[in-house]
Amino acid sequence: MTSLARSFLNVNTVAAGVVLAGLLVLGLVRLRARADGGARGLGKAVIGLWLLLLVYVTIVLASPSLGVRFSLVPLVDLVDGLFSRNWDNVAAANAANVALFLPLGAGLVLHSPRARWVVPVLVGFGLSLAIELTQGFVVRNGAVTADDLIANTAGAFLGWALMRWCAARLSSSGPVEGTT
Image (cartoon, rainbow, N blue to C red; front, side, top):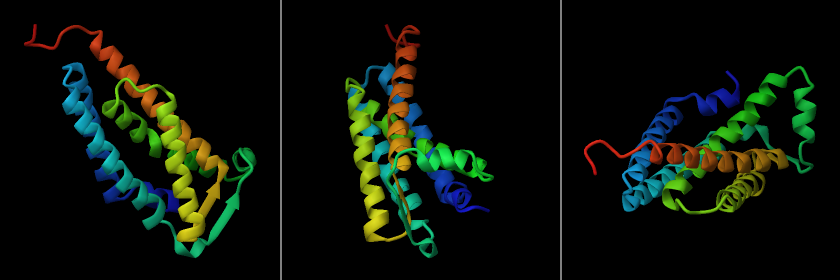
């Protein structure tokens, strides 16, 4: 089992993912019912749980035997990795970095439904930078890469865009049953 699979496929991360998914679905229901206060509270819960999951996956589960590796030139590792024998590991790691930040963007929609696209981009980039710096200079293990910043920021934006799209589809599908 690779360290990537160990990080994402364990009881704690799967359980947190299920709870996050449930909170996001409840948030969509609240948005559709125009219960902004309820959606905002669920957004806070999603972001809080996601932050705990982020620290758990990136700091707690990081293997201390790896040491720290810096790669600050954007996309070089990604391109090199995709053309190597381990291309599948590189693709999975980048997909995992995008997926890890999807709940942040979705939670931001619940918390601030009218926020523009720049909000998840800046928040995603800032939190990703904080994690990368923590890995590199505080806990001193893991890879500190520009590619991670790009993938994480993209994940926050995609989570925001997907949640906005779902919310728009639900709101245009007509009134909620039992309401006028």
